[in-house]
Length: 103
Image (cartoon, rainbow, N blue to C red; front, side):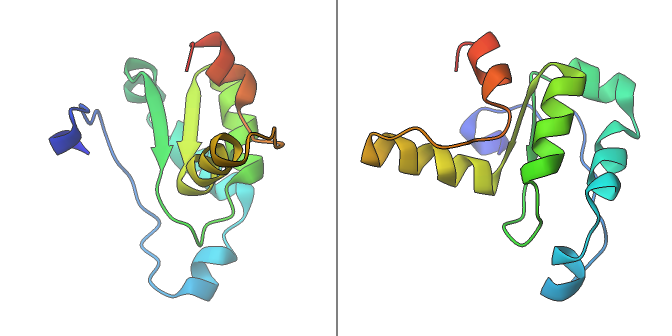
């Protein structure tokens, strides 16, 4: 990400390797992991959650509303790309945060 011009203010992982373990991760675990270092999170312009096997729809919704900032995952980015490609509007989590931040 830094090679694309983004500054990384922090990172965390779940230390999971198997797809089934990743996909079984509870929403609250994702939420808690992001909010664990809230001071560092508040310094960021956005939060990026990387992993297509991770079920992030609900977590992105809660985090973007709670933190009032952009939270994007690989799955959200894919949905936004589909919207643009097909000219449709999907139920994309965190949309209000995108709108507030003029994305």
